[in-house]
Length: 310
Image (cartoon, rainbow, N blue to C red; front, side, top):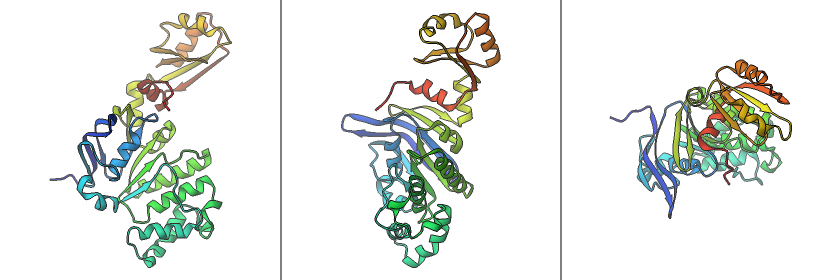
């Protein structure tokens, strides 16, 4: 008997484009009411996975069920129950806010009367009541993004799929969008999110997978991943020009792991105070010392590396 709480189930899920494997035999599950994230660098396979979940890109190999259905044969039925927020806003900029919502609702065979009944709640959710008659081209980036999410709610979906929902937004707009997404989660909507923002993943996701080169390299809650892959604290040392290369050898043994970057040295430790005291005891004088808690970004970079991916 199928588990009604199991929204998405993937087993050995694979996506290939000719000779290139974008998604390489991954396994994961998404349960009802949770916010599940795909975290990874560009080209990791996140968007390809999302397109298969959204039943707009065929599965090459493996098994995938969405809302208890097979995307290979039940694509229209799956899409009817999804809300999709693409990476790039694809609003009709020449039309007013309300017309964008009405036209999109018609794709789901909703009557104009039914759509108009839903408009006040959608505009309130997006905080666009005062801009309902404005053309989309006059909206800020944050407003457009909120409208795109509101549009994805027109069919009252069971699941919302969001691909890089806050890319390009300023901090205020990002936090407002997080608030809107958290509200949806409280209402029992399942969220599936791709992001490369570590703070976003920590804020929004109950569980996440870290992807790299088409594979899942780690899975768990943000806090569990931090505890498993990184000591509790990080001490960042910045030295004057020319001094860092001589300092690195003298730091040996002061932390669980030491990483040298071009502009600073990172000491991963469970006791930042002791590590800092050890730095001074060995006669080293960094220009700045910053102690902070380990973050999901530390985990991400340890798992996927610091090499730039285009």
